[in-house]
Length: 139
Image (cartoon, rainbow, N blue to C red):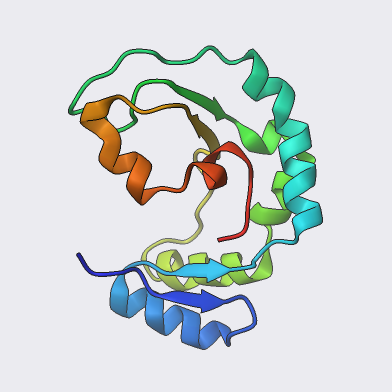
């Protein structure tokens, strides 16, 4: 499996765009502060806590069972606006999307909390660090 390239938020935006175009994906580390992540986590906690756990386990499902999914993050978290309007992320979206459209919009912002994974989906538990799903954390 080919690794997704990883850059720092301090790298030149042109370099990020070039990597995104070449690889089709890029991880930008430290694009948010710990204070912003803590704010978002605090604002979303009541929604996560009140969201029922999806217990259905299907081998071909995109999301594993034992997952809580919270959507509409723009409405639920003022801090999430800081991510949606982040200049670096907007520049990447502009570079990837604007050549093909007059404008674009965020369709869904979602938070996933994945609990213990069914044995048939254990590869997800190994490839996605649970800590980053259960709490907004830097990569």
